[in-house]
Length: 357
Ligand SMILES: [Cu+2]
Image 1 (cartoon, helix red, strand yellow):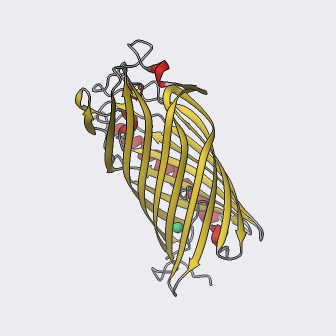
Image 2 (cartoon, rainbow, N blue to C red):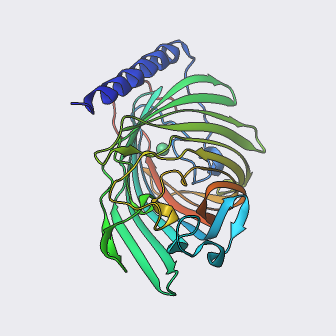
Image 3 (cartoon, rainbow, N blue to C red):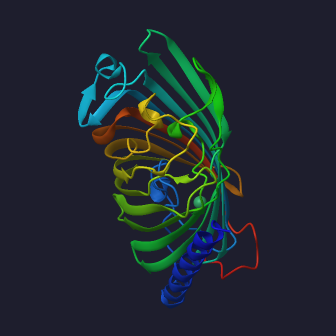
């Protein structure tokens, strides 16, 4: 009973935003662009960056990996020897490294020239290495479907080289929040960052601006993640805001190079999982999860028209933080990489909107 109300409020807020966006879209000029090059999609690490014309379908696959190594409190690195020890103040177990891998399958479909629907299914693999105050080492692993995300991208402005759309996303609690693995204390519930889901319905509102000239293209995007209510274990992850801006340089018709900056801020956990002991390991402390990070990334997009129907895109983007402030001790990010493939079918579903070509 108690979990129904926040969901209803969330749905109402979402529906209201969406109706507002639709009203805008109806008044906006046509989204016909004719902008069709390697850099007409953002760097592959950006989601929901582009919209489609009515009847278009696009399939995508992304593999991403993020590597975390060493601990940090605020902006200061902390060695494991500084952290290991008896509580309070120190921890019997300290994480040393983490790898987050994700296989993300996506589909896009535009039922209308100004509305593109998008769905994303992530498969997540998380691995963490630890040391103990007794001198032991152990690893934990978690693998599961992550939180499935759907969104509607609504074109609200299009004028020559400039385009704006709104992102109205909803993340479903399909990931795991109860994963257990073997530890020196037996089979235990794993701490928050080793779970593949949030356990809550999350709203993901945002806006995206795209611009291009003959020689360059650029874009800005801001997306929030707003958790609603609490999950079935009695907590919710911190809200999150991400803002990114990029610049891309087309080299001929097939290749483009990109550079991007991305700011992320995320809060601590509200509530707690009673199965976790925050004195044992910092990852189990709901008040040591928040942070801010600025990443710089570089990418390559390839655009390969193959056959009459499909247009393939291949892309890679790599990046590293230049600034991170962590409400730690928390594992710090070292690098990340995203590799992706996209296949678009123009006008696959006929009879929608008016084709322009
Ligand atoms: Cu697409």
